[in-house]
Length: 208
Picture 1: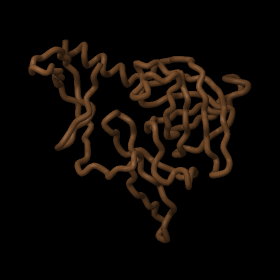
Picture 2: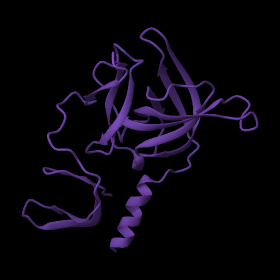
Picture 3: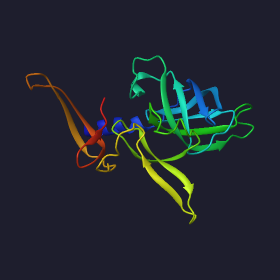
Picture 4: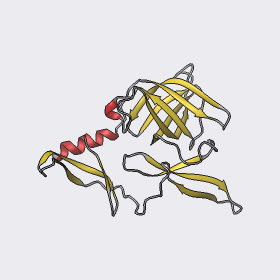
């Protein structure tokens, strides 16, 4: 039973090969923005791979609009289209025999429904991932300009506009049981699963 649950949770992180049409929106500058329709190569609830006719910069944010299966969504389950922001994690040039029109294979990590504070004023900001939040999306940290000593300056940022949590979450996987109670305190549902991460005051847990 436990092994079956662990296998199911592991598959939630595996990339599914779904060739769904997606709309990609990329903000070059405050004034300049482009949009392109392409198809997914693979996807999970927390990231995706696809190809574009032009390249993008690693560390930049990009918005995807996807007719995503509702079982893979973390929010907006009733919407026809799933709008999610992703951080560009890798860019690979495609050879001529792979595609005649697509030039770059892109991999993104989803950060959720909203952009970081200050993104609208500076869409060219470069970010890196730090940790995951309660839903499994990635939290970001700005990569700022090199200082006078030649070192990169970094500052923590929380993309939903709240304070960074007091206790860091550690990526620890342990077996747990989730139970649902009715108004009389009786157990009406139970599921064995595993944690994704833990802190002194909370946890993120996979569940169906």
